[in-house]
Image (tube, rainbow, N blue to C red; front, side, top):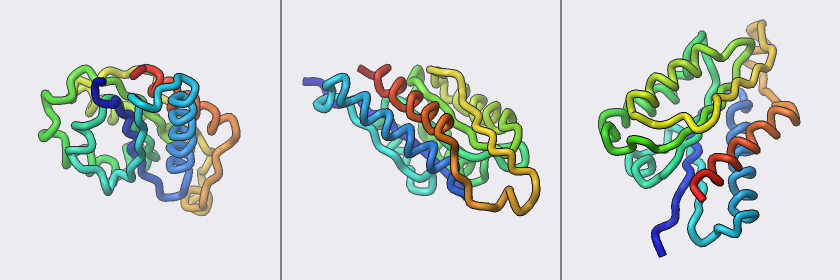
Length: 169
């Protein structure tokens, strides 16, 4: 039997929203594995971006990036993770599918564009349109407050995780 194929969910969060979205995607991917009866050859794992090693990325067959937008860009920790591993992965992950979930106060497009440019450099293939989950945080207090995603946002992340995992089937 060929080695198991793996979806890697990489996340960063300061206020909890992106982590909740990553967890919902993880649950969706796990449920897809059960429904597909693919436990023997499909895997999903989730790592905080600060713990990701190049080997984790090289051993994975698809990726889901979950991060907040800060000041119109990816959060610094997620960007640092991608910067750290960019050249180690160049020409080694071509064609692998990926997805993206961005949590944002009101926009999110800047962070999504930045992530897509990095993934284009790696020659990854966007498997599904990126999700931007706006949380309507506009004041400093609201921006820094702990977040709770809506059931609809959780469901969208769940479905993206399930779909990315099923794509490896």
